[in-house]
Image (cartoon, rainbow, N blue to C red):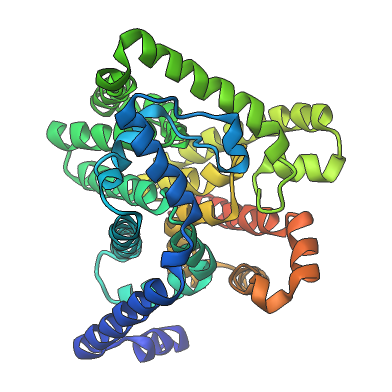
Length: 395
């Protein structure tokens, strides 16, 4: 038996052990909420207040909020509206559980997509969670929305992969609605728009755009139609004014932020980013064209798009890298296909990602680590790994 196969089999767990670990994990996260998270979740509080403002017909975007401005589309505030009627502590508890469920769905569906047979699923979940633990825990600490949106997109991918094997119009429509929902909550899901065009997935495109268009008018009952248009303009104005200053932020790991930190000149970095974005679009096009030589190309293409979200979004905070979970699972599953030198690089890369923790590095070293945008480079290495698998016709 091959050594790699022995290692995989050794790491497999019995069902009883798995259930005990899940129970232990649940108790651990319950304690984490009780003793730490419920006193934090600052980003959730911003969105919770947006739900209150929506109900009162007040503007969502206020410069007086400074760093804690609401930055999502007005339709996103609808998600928080029911929670805004509850005491903040109760709302936090519900949102915390929702994030946990989203993370569970992310890990479970990603491993199921990458390993349909289920032989290595437990190991994939454990290793993927270990690599991205920093971002998953940060999502919980802040009470962010990225885990929920990523879970919606992974569910969309799962439906599209099933449709790839057995085409069905209802599946394509369902996938499109999920894409529209994710985009209505946070526009970075628009990255799938050119992909759907290229792949001619019309039955996913029109329902998605229909849902997205309707979502723009969903706050109308609270503002009236003219007021709704004003709020939409306030949203775009707020983003355009606040984004440039945030490119220098320590936790911004996007390519635009990387270039601003490297050049120190926003104009030059914008030009370089525009050229780089064009190159990335061309490479993604080649990547997708190469997929014609693979039996089931959609999975790896979705993994590429999901990992690119935090890299090309101007507000790509480090915890947004949890969207890379599918790419991480693919690389771990296909680890044995890489040359020895590449495997060493990937292991080191995974270790840097997993261990780049503030409490471990200390304030000064962590500040230098983030100022150099090392994480940006780490995840471009994973992008390169996906390209290798595609060009070797493994995915």
